Length: 467
Image (tube, rainbow, N blue to C red; front, side, top):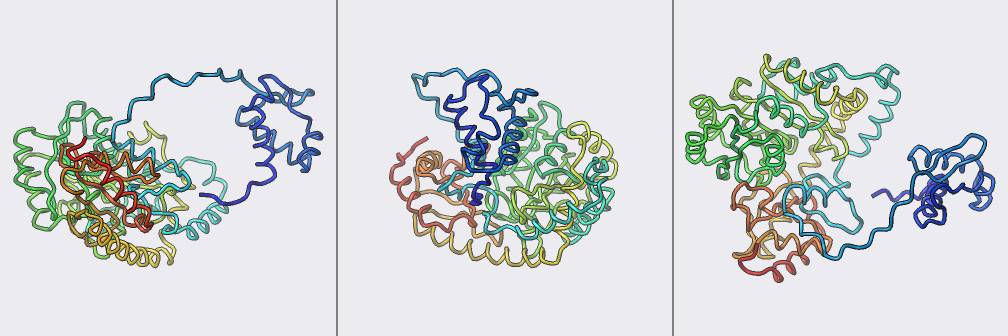
C-alpha cells in the first residue's frame, strides 16, 4: 500500500468528491470559485485549478466557459438494500484472484500467487522507469514492432538457452504477460469442443482459460515427478485430446518437478498419438538449477513454450513470451495484432533494462535464498498445525498441503476470509475432486503468525465431511 501523504491537489479533489458524494453539491450545482475554495482550504489558486481539471478529466465535473465548474451527470438513485443476502460465490479461480487483487489493509494473502512487496526488485524498476522516460520520443509515442521489442526477444533467446531450449530470436514473440501468451496459443491451436489434458492439480487459470476457449478438459493425476503417464495414456486413448497443457520446471500449485524419464515418456506419447503440448515456464527464475524442459527435448516441433519474464520483479510489471516453431510465428503474430494491436515499446524497453542490469542476477540469487528459508519455515509451521505437505519442493514459493481428514478446503477458506486471511483452496486447482481437502500456500506470504492462528480456528470450526 502507498503510505505517501496526499498532496494538496489530491486533498482538494477529495474535498469536492466528498461534497458530491454526500450531495452537498447536487447534480448541476456550481462549484465554489477557484479563489473561494483556495481561501477555504488554505492552498494556492493553481492547486484548485489543477484539482478541478482532474475532476473534469474524470467526468465528475464539467467546465462551462465564462461560468465556472459544475457537478456533472445525474445523481445516482438511492437504492434500498436487498431484502435477501446475495448468493455465496463459488470457490473458483475468480474468487481467489478478486480477493487477492483488492489489496485491502490488514489483509493477509498466503493464497496469492505473487511475491509480497518486500521481496520485489523495486529499486531496479524505479531506475529503469527513469531511463525509459529519457528514451527518444519515437519510442514513447509509437507501437512496438509486431513480434515485440527486438532486444527483449534476443534476451529471451539467451535465457531459454540457459534452460537448454535452443530457439532463434525470430521464433520468440513478446507478449504483455504470460496470461496473454497462453490465451493466444490456445486461440491459435483450439476450436470449441476440442479436448485438452491438464495435470490434476494444475494452475487454476488453466481451467479458466480453457473454459473461456470452450474446450473440454480432462485431468491426469500428478505425481511428484510429473504426470501419471499410464493414466495420461488412458485419457489420450479415450478422449483423443488436441493439447496437453502443463507447467515446466516448478509446477503450480504443488512445486513438483518433471523428471527426465517422465519427460521422455510424455514426448513419446505426444508422438504416438499426434498430441500437441503447451508448456508454461512462468517460475523458471526461481530454480537454482533448471530442470528438464519438454520444449528443449522436443526442439519446438510439438511443444510450444510460454513464460513470464517478471515473476521475480513484481506483479505490477507484466511481460511474457511465446517460443514456437518458425512456421507458427506468423499466424500467432497476426492473432496478437488482431486482439491487442501489439505491445507497449516503452514497457518492453523498461523490462529489458531491468533484466539486463547486473543487480537482477544478484536479486535472483538473494530471492532463491529467501524462498528456501521461507519454504523451511512454512513446512515446519504447517506440520505443527496439523497439515501435511504433499512433497517438499526443491525450490520455488508454492506448497500443496492436505488438511486433516474430513475437512473441506472450501469451508476453511470461507471462514478464513471472514478473518481477513485469504487462502487458496484446492478445488480451484482441480478438474476433479482431488483438491477437496488441500490448500496451496505461497511460502513468501506465510510469515505472519496470525495466518496460522486463523487456520487453527478455521479447522476447528469446519464441519467434518463438509462442502
